[in-house]
Length: 254
Ligand SMILES: NC(=O)c1ccc[n+]([C@@H]2O[C@H](COP(=O)([O-])OP(=O)(O)OC[C@H]3O[C@@H](n4cnc5c(N)ncnc54)[C@H](O)[C@@H]3O)[C@@H](O)[C@H]2O)c1
Image (cartoon, rainbow, N blue to C red):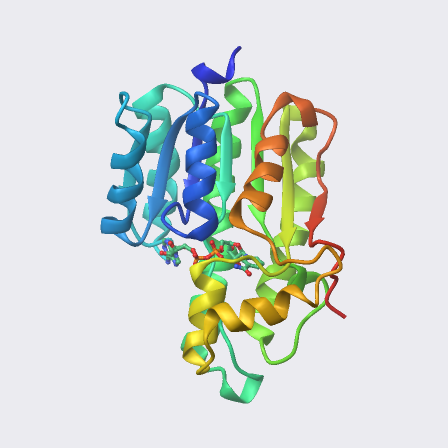
């Protein structure tokens, strides 16, 4: 089967990494189901990519809803007849020490960063099993590996994503489903930039300083992450399963 007959679902498709993921899948010929809470930004992503014919179908909604998570997967199968790739990319970063973290902060972080992935993976794996397999990539974070300071909700939730991805990879390799995780360090996206703005820093200056802390000389651009997802959802990675790939320019967080 060529990639032009395949279908991918991408969550967080209107975000910094998400919109590049969608663009790359379209360039490979995939039909893409793009999900995000920001309906307007999602429409902008799709309309830019649908100029040469329909390639992106949008489904806006909130990943805190179990029904939405499952509808996203069902919509892919109903609209295109199949599901070959799922990228659980959406995520939120919750700042603050444990005493600064409210119950609502904790629950929102786990709902979006972990529970939504449980719901989409469960639905997708059930469908992929019946249709010859597929590839799932969950976006993890280096802070799930080596927790950074002052972000316990985020770090713990991302650690759970890594463990879940490895479990699913092992459990469903025999079904022809490859589940892996990608683990970025700092990426130049709205998530990183708005964090600097909220703390009163100029994002360009802050990123320039961050660049000097990376052995490779710069923080990642969304394309650096999307290229690895592209590899993991292609046949070139056919023997890679149940693993997590660090994409960090040689800058681990200790
Ligand atoms: N930017 C970084 O430095 C960095 C580092 C490590 C890991 N990551 C991970 O990469 C992934 C993408 O991050 P990004 O930097 O592109 O972030 P981003 O903030 O630019 O994009 C995230 C997208 O997810 C969507 N989203 C958030 N909550 C949602 C919800 N409840 N329902 C539906 N959609 C929702 C947002 O609307 C947004 O479009 C995240 O999982 C993040 O944790 C990012």
